[in-house]
Length: 354
Image (tube, rainbow, N blue to C red; front, side):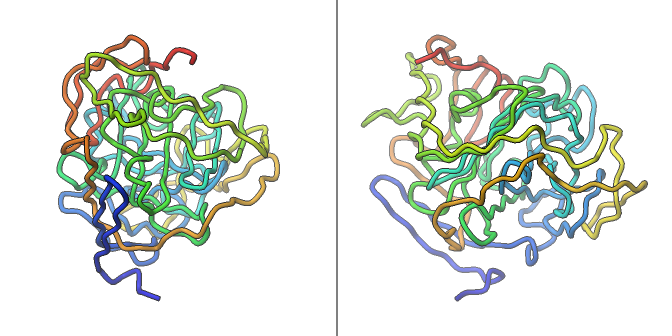
C-alpha cells in the first residue's frame, strides 16, 4: 500500500496511448492548493457553503454529483471567461462545496460503465451563476498550460469502489445543458475522456440521454472514444465533421422523481470547515433522491499517482484550432482553443439522428 500524500510517478502504456502521472490525493489529504495560480482551494472540509471557493468535484451517483460553474454571477461570467476560476456546485451536502439549488437540475441521467461514469442533463443553470444564453464551454484537468480548467480543479468518485481521485475527466457546461464524464484510471482513460473537442459540445462528446423531466441511473457498456473512427482520428477544423458515436444501450435503469437538497435558489449557506470560505446565513439541506438507487458496479478504482500530462498519437499536442463545421455533427460554431480550454458555443448543438 502507498500513502496518497506521497508523490511518485507511474507510466502506463497501451498501443498509441501513453500517460505519465504524478500526485494523487483524497479530499482528506489534499493541500490547500494543487496548482500555481489557483483561485480557490482543495481543502474544503465538510458541510456546505454557498460562498465556498472549493474546487473539488464529485461524480458518485445520480443524487451525488457536482458541476463546475462560475463563483460570481453577472453577464461577464460566461464559461469562456471564467474557465480558470470555476468552483464546485454539488447536489449533496457534506463536500464543503456550494449546493446546486433545488429546481436548477430539470433532468439528469447517470450512467455507469466499466471504464467511466457520466451524468448528462438539462436545467436552469443560471441558478449556479452561468449567464442566460451562454452556450458554454469545456472544462478538464489539462487546460492550455497543464494546470487545468479550472486551475487546480480535482475530481473524485466512489463509483468504482473506494473513493479515489479521477485524473481524466471532461465537463461541458452551458446555461441550459450539462455533461460530465469521469474515467477510471487506466490506459483507456485519456481517449474516453478526451479534451481536445472543446467546441463540439455535450451531445457529440458524450452521447446519451438529455431528456427533461426525468431522472434515472443506468448501467451501460463502454462507448466509443470521441473523435476516433476505426484507424482515423477527427480533429476540429477538418473539412468533414463526422457524426457523434451512438450512445451505448443502457440497462438496469432505476428511475427517480427528482433530486434535491433543500437549498432554495436564494443561496443560503451553512457553516463549513472549508478553507477560505465564510458563511453568512444558515440553512439545512441534505442531498436526496425520491427513490432508492442500486449500488454502483465496476472494478476497483486504480489508485495510481498521476500528473497532468497525456499524449495520444494522432492528436498532436491537443491544440485544436479553426472553426468546427456545423453540418453532420451538430458542432457548434466558434474557434477552437488550446487543449482543454473552454470555448463559447460548446454545448448546445446536438448531432442528427444516426
